[in-house]
Image (cartoon, rainbow, N blue to C red; front, side, top):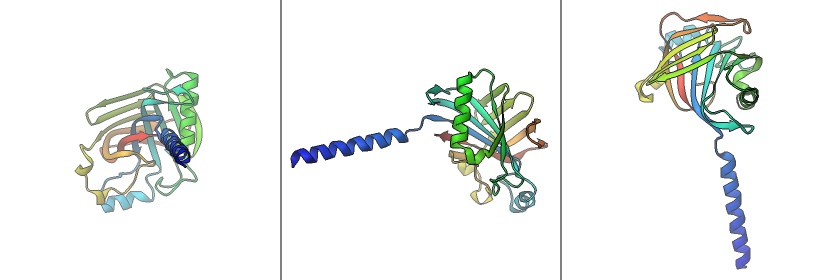
Length: 217
């Protein structure tokens, strides 16, 4: 009886250890999302934008550590630009996206990044219509973030100092994907133009249209 108890205990320990190991994240980093509608704003402004706005977004994954398909993705940044026929908060069926990766990435890294995003973020991206290589610059200084993708995209954003620095009842949207430590931010430069999506934009003025947080896959 004692030997049966010992074997059972060992088996349960093994199963628990295996489950824990499989749940550990393999890729981690910072996530920035910019929308074409204000995510933190008064009710009237939100209502006026909802029907005709909010159809575009930019998602930035700045990977700090991790591997995917046995390929190291450490210190890589990948950007997705997403568009739909209606506000992204309610529209998933018509989403189309373009992925951008830096030319310094290897063929194996680009394949791993593409597989990672289409596997884990298929609902966010919708149909990926193109995967492009373009020079990607990601810089962070304090609460300020700057992202540039070649000549097609420029984003300069500044997050609020803390989650408690905003009024929760005026945050009308959620990030397109689950992130940790989400904080609202504002952008003062946000523009995009590329032939792969039938949309272009150039923001004028400052908008509270950004989420910043951490991701863990």
